[in-house]
Length: 241
Image (cartoon, rainbow, N blue to C red; front, side):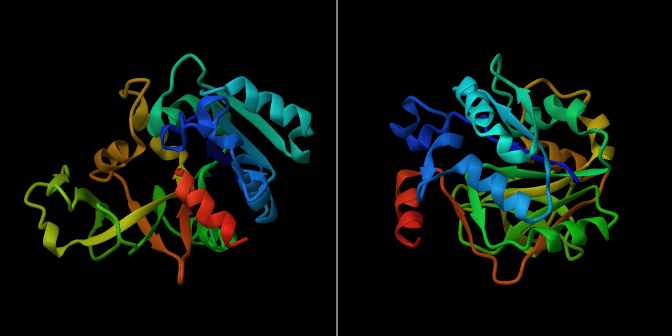
Protein backbone atom coordinates (compact mmCIF):
# COMPACT_ATOMS: atom_id res chain seq x y z
CA UNK A 1 0.00 0.00 0.00
CA UNK A 2 1.27 3.47 -0.88
CA UNK A 3 1.04 6.49 1.41
CA UNK A 4 0.24 10.08 0.46
CA UNK A 5 1.75 12.56 2.91
CA UNK A 6 0.03 15.93 2.81
CA UNK A 7 2.88 18.42 3.21
CA UNK A 8 1.82 21.33 0.99
CA UNK A 9 0.12 23.56 3.56
CA UNK A 10 1.13 27.15 4.24
CA UNK A 11 1.65 26.50 7.95
CA UNK A 12 0.01 29.82 8.81
CA UNK A 13 -0.53 28.87 12.45
CA UNK A 14 3.21 28.19 12.81
CA UNK A 15 4.42 31.61 11.72
CA UNK A 16 7.08 32.96 12.03
CA UNK A 17 8.64 29.46 11.84
CA UNK A 18 7.15 28.99 8.37
CA UNK A 19 8.17 32.39 7.02
CA UNK A 20 11.27 30.82 5.46
CA UNK A 21 10.46 27.11 5.28
CA UNK A 22 7.54 24.73 4.71
CA UNK A 23 5.70 23.32 7.70
CA UNK A 24 6.98 19.87 6.79
CA UNK A 25 10.57 20.99 7.50
CA UNK A 26 9.85 22.53 10.89
CA UNK A 27 11.66 20.45 13.48
CA UNK A 28 9.85 18.66 16.29
CA UNK A 29 12.18 17.57 19.08
CA UNK A 30 15.07 17.92 16.62
CA UNK A 31 13.47 16.03 13.72
CA UNK A 32 11.51 17.55 10.84
CA UNK A 33 7.83 16.69 10.63
CA UNK A 34 8.38 15.12 7.22
CA UNK A 35 11.23 12.87 8.33
CA UNK A 36 9.31 11.86 11.44
CA UNK A 37 6.25 10.91 9.38
CA UNK A 38 8.28 9.03 6.77
CA UNK A 39 10.17 7.07 9.40
CA UNK A 40 7.04 6.20 11.38
CA UNK A 41 5.28 4.93 8.28
CA UNK A 42 8.40 3.11 7.08
CA UNK A 43 8.58 1.30 10.42
CA UNK A 44 4.94 0.31 9.86
CA UNK A 45 5.86 -1.37 6.58
CA UNK A 46 5.40 1.41 3.99
CA UNK A 47 8.18 1.95 1.48
CA UNK A 48 6.43 3.81 -1.35
CA UNK A 49 5.28 7.38 -0.82
CA UNK A 50 3.84 10.41 -2.54
CA UNK A 51 4.52 13.79 -0.92
CA UNK A 52 2.62 16.85 -2.11
CA UNK A 53 4.41 20.22 -2.04
CA UNK A 54 3.49 23.89 -2.44
CA UNK A 55 4.80 26.38 0.17
CA UNK A 56 8.61 26.39 -0.26
CA UNK A 57 8.11 23.18 -2.21
CA UNK A 58 11.62 23.38 -3.65
CA UNK A 59 13.03 23.11 -0.13
CA UNK A 60 11.17 19.85 0.46
CA UNK A 61 12.41 18.46 -2.85
CA UNK A 62 16.00 19.48 -2.01
CA UNK A 63 15.70 18.07 1.53
CA UNK A 64 14.64 14.67 0.21
CA UNK A 65 17.41 14.66 -2.40
CA UNK A 66 20.04 15.51 0.23
CA UNK A 67 18.89 12.57 2.33
CA UNK A 68 18.56 10.21 -0.66
CA UNK A 69 14.84 9.92 0.11
CA UNK A 70 15.82 8.15 3.37
CA UNK A 71 16.19 5.00 1.27
CA UNK A 72 12.50 5.08 0.32
CA UNK A 73 10.60 5.27 -2.96
CA UNK A 74 9.22 8.83 -2.89
CA UNK A 75 7.38 10.67 -5.67
CA UNK A 76 6.46 14.36 -5.57
CA UNK A 77 2.98 15.64 -6.33
CA UNK A 78 3.87 19.18 -7.35
CA UNK A 79 1.34 21.84 -6.34
CA UNK A 80 3.69 24.81 -6.52
CA UNK A 81 1.39 26.38 -9.12
CA UNK A 82 -1.71 26.11 -6.91
CA UNK A 83 -2.43 24.96 -3.36
CA UNK A 84 -5.29 22.55 -3.94
CA UNK A 85 -6.54 21.85 -0.38
CA UNK A 86 -6.86 18.31 0.95
CA UNK A 87 -9.34 16.97 -1.59
CA UNK A 88 -7.70 18.63 -4.55
CA UNK A 89 -4.39 17.19 -3.36
CA UNK A 90 -5.75 13.66 -3.67
CA UNK A 91 -7.22 14.34 -7.10
CA UNK A 92 -3.95 15.91 -8.33
CA UNK A 93 -1.86 13.02 -6.96
CA UNK A 94 -4.19 10.36 -8.38
CA UNK A 95 -1.93 9.41 -11.34
CA UNK A 96 0.75 8.46 -8.80
CA UNK A 97 -1.66 6.49 -6.61
CA UNK A 98 -4.35 4.90 -8.75
CA UNK A 99 -2.40 1.67 -9.26
CA UNK A 100 -3.27 0.88 -5.64
CA UNK A 101 -6.66 -0.52 -4.62
CA UNK A 102 -6.38 1.54 -1.43
CA UNK A 103 -3.80 4.04 -0.15
CA UNK A 104 -3.09 5.74 3.15
CA UNK A 105 -3.39 9.53 3.52
CA UNK A 106 -1.51 11.12 6.44
CA UNK A 107 -1.18 14.81 7.38
CA UNK A 108 2.47 15.69 7.93
CA UNK A 109 1.78 17.58 11.18
CA UNK A 110 -0.02 14.72 12.95
CA UNK A 111 1.70 12.42 15.43
CA UNK A 112 -0.04 9.58 17.22
CA UNK A 113 0.36 6.21 18.89
CA UNK A 114 -1.77 4.57 16.20
CA UNK A 115 -0.86 1.00 15.34
CA UNK A 116 -0.68 1.62 11.59
CA UNK A 117 -0.66 -2.08 10.55
CA UNK A 118 -3.77 -2.59 12.69
CA UNK A 119 -5.47 0.34 10.97
CA UNK A 120 -4.50 -0.92 7.51
CA UNK A 121 -5.76 -4.38 8.41
CA UNK A 122 -9.11 -2.99 9.54
CA UNK A 123 -9.48 -1.14 6.25
CA UNK A 124 -8.49 -4.09 4.05
CA UNK A 125 -10.92 -6.35 5.88
CA UNK A 126 -13.76 -3.87 5.31
CA UNK A 127 -15.81 -3.15 2.21
CA UNK A 128 -15.69 0.58 3.03
CA UNK A 129 -14.57 2.93 0.28
CA UNK A 130 -12.77 5.10 2.84
CA UNK A 131 -11.71 4.41 6.42
CA UNK A 132 -11.34 7.44 8.68
CA UNK A 133 -9.43 7.32 11.95
CA UNK A 134 -11.53 9.24 14.48
CA UNK A 135 -11.73 9.75 18.23
CA UNK A 136 -13.93 11.27 20.93
CA UNK A 137 -11.50 14.04 21.81
CA UNK A 138 -12.90 17.49 22.52
CA UNK A 139 -13.07 19.91 19.60
CA UNK A 140 -15.57 22.29 18.04
CA UNK A 141 -15.95 20.43 14.75
CA UNK A 142 -17.12 16.84 14.50
CA UNK A 143 -17.94 14.32 11.85
CA UNK A 144 -21.32 12.66 12.34
CA UNK A 145 -21.75 8.90 12.06
CA UNK A 146 -24.76 6.59 12.28
CA UNK A 147 -25.02 3.44 14.40
CA UNK A 148 -23.14 1.49 11.72
CA UNK A 149 -20.20 3.93 11.97
CA UNK A 150 -20.90 5.31 8.51
CA UNK A 151 -20.44 9.01 7.78
CA UNK A 152 -23.66 11.01 7.51
CA UNK A 153 -22.67 14.62 8.23
CA UNK A 154 -20.54 17.26 9.93
CA UNK A 155 -21.21 19.82 12.64
CA UNK A 156 -19.59 22.77 14.37
CA UNK A 157 -20.92 22.58 17.91
CA UNK A 158 -19.74 26.14 18.67
CA UNK A 159 -21.87 27.69 15.94
CA UNK A 160 -24.54 25.04 15.46
CA UNK A 161 -23.68 24.70 11.77
CA UNK A 162 -24.49 21.33 10.21
CA UNK A 163 -23.48 19.96 6.81
CA UNK A 164 -25.24 16.91 5.43
CA UNK A 165 -26.78 15.65 2.21
CA UNK A 166 -29.11 13.33 4.11
CA UNK A 167 -32.61 14.75 4.39
CA UNK A 168 -34.09 14.82 7.88
CA UNK A 169 -30.87 13.80 9.62
CA UNK A 170 -31.27 13.68 13.41
CA UNK A 171 -27.99 15.23 14.52
CA UNK A 172 -28.62 14.51 18.19
CA UNK A 173 -28.90 10.80 17.38
CA UNK A 174 -25.53 10.69 15.61
CA UNK A 175 -22.14 9.76 17.00
CA UNK A 176 -19.87 12.84 17.08
CA UNK A 177 -16.24 12.06 16.40
CA UNK A 178 -13.14 14.18 15.71
CA UNK A 179 -11.22 13.45 12.52
CA UNK A 180 -7.52 12.67 12.93
CA UNK A 181 -6.08 13.58 9.52
CA UNK A 182 -5.26 9.90 8.94
CA UNK A 183 -7.43 7.90 6.53
CA UNK A 184 -7.39 5.18 3.91
CA UNK A 185 -8.87 5.98 0.52
CA UNK A 186 -10.05 3.58 -2.16
CA UNK A 187 -9.37 4.27 -5.83
CA UNK A 188 -13.05 3.48 -6.41
CA UNK A 189 -13.71 7.00 -5.12
CA UNK A 190 -11.44 8.73 -7.63
CA UNK A 191 -14.01 8.88 -10.47
CA UNK A 192 -16.32 10.82 -8.14
CA UNK A 193 -13.70 13.58 -8.06
CA UNK A 194 -13.84 14.15 -11.82
CA UNK A 195 -16.54 16.81 -11.51
CA UNK A 196 -14.74 18.66 -8.71
CA UNK A 197 -12.59 21.77 -9.30
CA UNK A 198 -8.85 21.76 -8.76
CA UNK A 199 -9.19 22.99 -5.17
CA UNK A 200 -11.57 21.45 -2.62
CA UNK A 201 -11.70 19.94 0.88
CA UNK A 202 -11.57 16.18 1.39
CA UNK A 203 -14.20 16.53 4.12
CA UNK A 204 -16.62 18.22 1.73
CA UNK A 205 -15.93 15.43 -0.74
CA UNK A 206 -16.59 12.73 1.87
CA UNK A 207 -19.85 14.43 2.89
CA UNK A 208 -21.00 14.24 -0.71
CA UNK A 209 -19.66 10.75 -1.38
CA UNK A 210 -21.21 9.22 1.75
CA UNK A 211 -24.65 9.30 0.15
CA UNK A 212 -23.40 6.85 -2.49
CA UNK A 213 -20.41 5.07 -0.94
CA UNK A 214 -19.35 3.69 2.43
CA UNK A 215 -17.25 6.16 4.39
CA UNK A 216 -16.49 4.39 7.65
CA UNK A 217 -15.21 5.49 11.07
CA UNK A 218 -12.60 3.49 12.94
CA UNK A 219 -11.47 4.20 16.51
CA UNK A 220 -8.15 2.98 17.88
CA UNK A 221 -8.30 2.02 21.58
CA UNK A 222 -6.52 4.57 23.80
CA UNK A 223 -5.56 6.71 20.82
CA UNK A 224 -3.19 9.55 21.65
CA UNK A 225 -2.93 12.10 18.88
CA UNK A 226 -1.51 15.57 18.53
CA UNK A 227 -1.73 18.20 15.82
CA UNK A 228 1.67 19.93 15.75
CA UNK A 229 0.39 22.87 13.73
CA UNK A 230 0.99 25.53 16.39
CA UNK A 231 4.10 26.74 18.29
CA UNK A 232 2.44 25.78 21.59
CA UNK A 233 1.86 22.22 20.37
CA UNK A 234 5.48 21.96 19.20
CA UNK A 235 6.75 23.15 22.58
CA UNK A 236 4.46 20.77 24.47
CA UNK A 237 5.48 17.79 22.34
CA UNK A 238 9.17 18.65 22.63
CA UNK A 239 8.96 18.96 26.41
CA UNK A 240 7.66 15.39 26.65
CA UNK A 241 10.50 13.91 24.60
